[in-house]
Amino acid sequence: MLSKLKTNAAVEISNRVHDLNCFKQFTCRSIMLAIILLGYCTSAAKAEEDETYSNSQEFQLHGFISQGLIDVDGSDFVNDDGDVSAELTEIGLNASYQLSDNFRLAGQVVYLDGGNRYSQGARIDYALVDWSAFTSENWQANVYLGRFKNNHWLYSSSRDIPFARPSIILPQSVYFDGFRDIAVGSDGIATKISYSTDDYGNFDWQFSYGKSPISDEQTKNILSEFAQGSAEQNYDAQTSLYWQPSFSPWRFGISLLDAGFGYDRGDAGSGDIFFDSEFNFQFYTMNALYEGENWEFSGEIYQQRFTIDGFYYPGFQLDNIGQGFYLQSRYKLTQKLTLLARYEDFYLNKDDKDGKKMEQATGGAVPYYFGFHKDITLGLNYDITSNFSARMEYHWVNGAGRLTPVVVPNTQINDSEDWQMWAIQLMYWF
Amino acid sequence: MSSRAVAIEIVTHPQVTEISLTKSQLRRIYTMRQLRWSDDSAINVFVLPNQHDLHQRFAKERLQIFPYQLNRIWHKLTYSGLGVAPTVVASEKELIQAVTKTPGAIGYIDDGTLKKIEQNERIKRIESPGMEASQQTRSKGVVNVVKIKN
Image (spheres, each protein chain N blue to C red):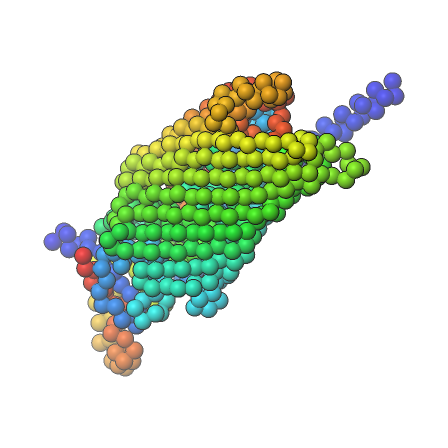
């Protein structure tokens, strides 16, 4: 009886805490929305007042704020309970300051809330010294030191910038939110060399070397909720080359990535069921982009190799080659309204595209549909002003290959092969 | 006559020495691929908001690039820390003020607006001849109009 009372009391308290959290969240979202609208109104007023400009090229301050609603049906992509969620908040503020002719400081702080997609909170997106090592009419060479963003893939640098990316949720096989904090950038050194000619067009070559810190929460997100130890990225080396022929609507790119990770199991007392291990991830992409007056096409095709040495037990070996692509089309219906359609197809192991072998190998513990991820997306974007947009989209997803945790998946919540989601988002930037 | 009325002129700060630019140079400047003038001084690029009619026309007619493409290039620079994008000003009047005041500045202006400004300037000079002398020694005028060659 007493224990029952205790349980009831506990449920009561947890409900109240839940209500309180809901209330807090509701208040937060309302304030957020108010700020977006206020930002919109002041920008409109500012245009009318004809104020003098505040940004110069020596010092620039920019930012963005966005809030949306997202509803996922059939997976734990955003939340575990499947309710409509306001966990779609992205806020950013950045500054750039020209120290001297050749040196510039730049940094950006972002606050993200995406539910299960990545850890909630503020982070330093980038903080760097930009050394303009060489510049002429045709050449530019820059060296970036500090925390820099990944600029190697088609949308890797704009994945957090709501209005700069093509959709609210990006193709998860490349821009997997579970890997966001590791893939979005690194602490280290990067270089960019650009060459522009009238005859051959624009060439951009980039190289970066560094590593990203991995929090305990991320370790659990990526490996398993039961992982008690700590994961670390040992290195991340990337390079990419982009070419846009002279005055052409086309642009082509390739990128290569090689990254190493280690896992140190928790102390003897922590009850960690996993073992010390090494992980290696390699990723190769090719992309093409066509930008016409009304039509736009883009696509990326890629192959990844993921190896595990250890983890489940000392000496365990895994070596999977995954492949995928997405094709995306956008059509400008009017100057303000853009339609989007995209198809994405990805499998984690090219020798087991339907995941059946994986299901067998795990004795049924990991169902076959964790072996792939396909997504059909339709969406639209409405540019209300030059700095204020609204966006909505619908995703039909087949497969659970891009849900967290990755290494040891949650098969209880993700019990269906097909799942869907819709999302709407308002965004303001300056 | 009507084609004259819609012409867009490229203007620079009076101290910028370039009197002409090729179409590709102009495009390199506005896509932030050329950051310095021939005398190695920094280029300060000014633009109107994306949805402004004059900006839309400038992008398509002068740069032969769609305004949304310019936006993407600039957003990438601004929000990924790679570089600095042009400064956006709210109106044509502000743009011309910015170009007049900022060394190394480049901007664009409607032909008709430019004529009005030049007229006003002439009137001012007639009204205060003292100003004229100082203006003349400092620069050739309020702004330079740059020729764009193919």
